Every structure is written in structure tokens, then in C-alpha cells.
Length: 211
Image 1: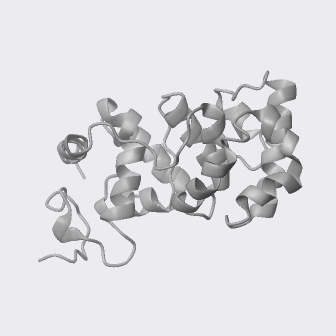
Image 2: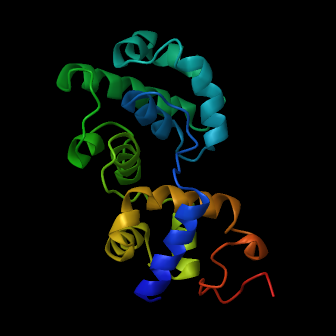
């Protein structure tokens, strides 16, 4: 795929959705960090359902730490892998309190040192909470990048590196959101909605479902 095509693809995505946001509900970097930590192998819908009850009670590291692992589990037991996630969240709260003055760190190294926080989670927090250029490649972004040929790669790290290299600079801050939403609602894993796709004519996917 050439530079002009990529420019046009992101121009269209921006025109359709000028201010894309995550579908996770949060009101602070701490709430976003916890929501993303909970979202591994779970839907944003299920996470939001749980955090709507949790965050009014525990929206700071101190308040959440005070719940304890068992107390936290009661709020998130509808989320997959809730046992491990509760333990990681409480340990994360403890580290934030003891090492970061209860603030969410703004570097990848410090974020990835938190229990349960990997590269993807760190990238989401850096990009969404702190508006740093970072590309969190999930299953949707991996699929869209490979299908369209915007940034094809054999693994998530390769796709991440290519997106950072190939996405025009003016679109880098919001590219993560545009791609994830496109993959979630249009370029779906099964039966992609090519006939409803605003970049269908630019996409280099060979097995399009439209005519």
C-alpha cells in the first residue's frame, strides 16, 4: 500500500469520526488503567457494567486497595479471569501508593512494571490518558492492518512498529481508536461489512464480501 492510499484512508476515518474515544468508561488515568487491566479477554461492555458499580466506591488507589482482593472480586466477578485480575489490581494499587504517590506513571517502563500490565495495556494508557503517540495492537487492529494492507505484519509487535512508521503523523494520536472501532463494527472477523465500509475502494483485502 502506498503513502497516498494511507493518507486517504485516515482522512476518511477522521472525517467520519473527528474525535474518536475509547468505549471503556473512565474519568481519570487511574480508572482507565484499571478498566484496561480488566478488559483482557473481556468485552468493553462487560467491563463498563462492572466499573459503573466499582468506580463510585473505589476511584483511587487507596480506596481500591482498602477493598482488598476479596472485596474487589465482588464487583468484578462477572468479568472473565476476575480472580487474577482482582489480585493484579490490588497489587497495582499498592505499587502506585508506595512508589508513585498514587499517580499513574507516564512511561512505558513504569507501566509495564505493574502487575498484569503488558505492552498493549501500557500503550492504551499512554495514548488515551496521556495523549502520547503509542499504538496498542489488539485483535481488531491486527486484523484491519493486515486485511487492508495498511501495516501488514506476522505478529502484533511488527504491526505496531509498521503503524508507527506508516501512519501519517497528523493521524498518529487517534489512529488506534479509528482502527479498533473499524475492526469492531465494520471489518469484523467473520463476514466483514465491506458494502458499508468507507475505505472499501482503498482496501487491498482480496476476499471482500461486497461486489
